[in-house]
Amino acid sequence: MTKTFGYPLDGFNPIATLNPETYLRGLVTTTPVDFGSLVSGSITVAAYEDNDYVKMVVMEALPSSGNWGKITPNGISNPVMINTGTQNVDFTWATPPTMTAFREYAFCLIFSGSGDYGLQLNGESNAGIKLLSENDNNYTSPTDYAGSAPATGTALAVVLTYTPRPSNVFGYTGWDAKYEEGFPDTWGPASTLTTPSDFASIVSGSAFVSGSSAGINVKMVIVKRSDLTIVPNGVSSPVTLDSGSGKVYNFTFPASPTMLLNTAYTFGLICDSGVVWYDEFYISGDGELVTDSSNSYTSPTDPTDAGIYSAGNFKPFLITYNLTGSAIISRSGMISEGLVIII
Image (cartoon, rainbow, N blue to C red; front, side, top):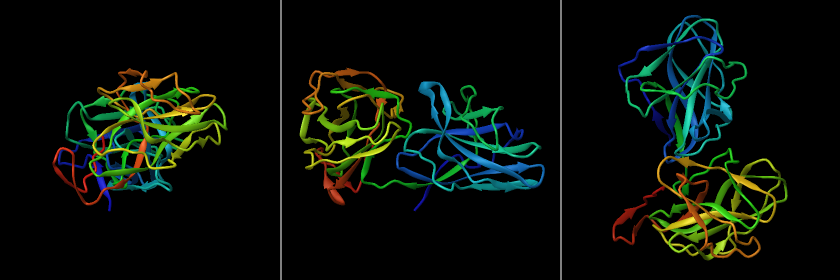
């Protein structure tokens, strides 16, 4: 089963002209909360000569760092040939771009030929829609976006097709790391997630982690947010970083941590040496970042003296869990049928 997001044609479709080769235009939009992987993208294009080519480039928007377009791994699509006239163009990727749910990405077009092109615009207009525009890129080897912040108000009519992620996960994860750093015997920076209404038990947790060197040992520690005490069995088995460069690591637990559904828990990492960095999934708005600098990798302790800082919604962890069943009674007394709530 696949789903779509983006902005389809809606009957109000002025043409935005686009010069070739170095000009790049893109729609900035947010992936759905159930996003799993990108299947394809499509847009209507008007071309004025035959045998030209166009690519779609997926870039992660990182507004908090002032970078509106960093090409994701595998983010450059297969080239598609276009001819004179107006046509719908479908883009695919040899390997799905590395992306995550509920995150801003720019879906950009860049052309090979010497003529002008037209891109269909969606007529919806509001401050939440962003249009990326750069005049100094390269069709043969597209580069990260180096332009200014996107204009707002009118969207490219780009439709993206995706495969939903499995229903038994919650949280978020990314791929760029090196946003928040952890030091030896420091728990955190940690973030708070709420278990879904059909939660039974944790299977594993994952995060994109890089380190100052190979050989650093890292554990995941889960605490109950209400009192900052480690949950029973809440310390994972150690994971050893196999290189300094980042990748997704999976954390498992010797015994199932004791946790409840619909309850807030704070997830953090602790290392034994060096420095580790992990991805900062940032959603604007109220939130917190939790750090305890007086802890122990060997024997983690309750981080009851942790510092709690306002830092947006910092959520770098993806949690896989076992389901309770198709119908459960929540603690509030309401009935949920197979519903996964992602916070």
